[in-house]
Image (cartoon, rainbow, N blue to C red; front, side, top):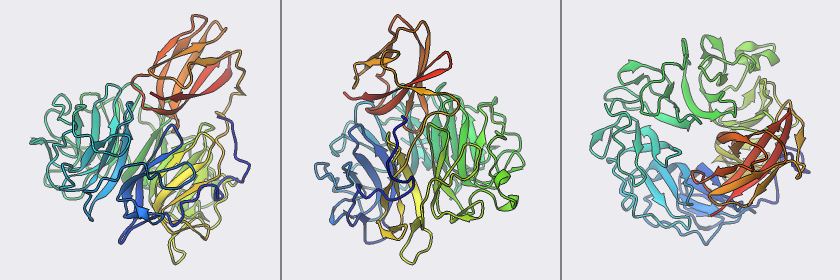
Length: 480
């Protein structure tokens, strides 16, 4: 976890070469990315080619940025098809959500095998003209979808639903059918879904009501789809929520297009305590003499939480705290700008104007893959995808140790189980994914605890052990 790039953080990583990148006849963009265990990256968006080769909306690129031609292209995407989200299952299959009608048997959501071929056992029962913006897979394998829709499988489901593993509607979730939006709405939708460790569900978007009652833009639900009344937002958030990220301690980072949370100024970025109350220790306005222009000057679309507490922010903004930062910025845990992350001219379109960052993934070595709608990074041609040098540091406040005699994982790579081997009497552990979200936690010791990994997707994880204020770190690869 404490590996670092030799190059300056934020600069272009020239070892990742996409050639002419992701292109299309109109509106090419990357909306979704998933980092795979072998370093390859699934891409989804709107495109026709990647470095001149066929790449219709969905594909896979190698670790060096080249097109992975072993990935099977799905031939039935129509020209007006868009992919907005990708979610990886533990078995290597992945779900795709977006705006596509009559794409073979797919309408708004579908499942694919790891090689790119469609999974015909998953039956999309959405209605025509539905849009799925967000997908989250629960620990039991059930699938939460959010977007802009009013029905699924012939049942009323307003902008949020839960599916069984085969794609059928789970009638135990939000059984009344009332959801996030308003009756006969046209633009209200769910844009982000995050499942907490306790299986409560955070949703964000443009909605103004939930089940007919006023709940604007951000909400936490119980596992059955009812409102979690313990999440006390007070006066709430003043505008659109585009993205949510969860800290290991269950604090919530929010990005979008708002200027206040609970009546306090927070320009498009805020951090919230697990109970819904604002976390005042994150305050960008404290680091500029002009509080009214703190934070970003336009929308935030995506955030990454680094293990060291730093936050990478992507969107269509041009400034952070009134300093030029086009499309991407890294900030410290308190909201101050991290000036060691040097982006130069940043994300740009052809005439030098600001481009859009829609999605980012953080690699274990700290490098950041950035996707969106742009043609340059720091004045160097890069069509819609780029990789930046970076560093992830170590979690704040504790010294990081990698002594193999104190903490081992066996086997590693692991399948459905891994053993923690330690001579320590007591070791509290957390398993986090590469975004920093805790996916498993518990306590081990000399009994060499076995951890059940069967609910986790293949990929890269971090296992952090805390013993007597010593932080022990290991990288874990789950591969079946």
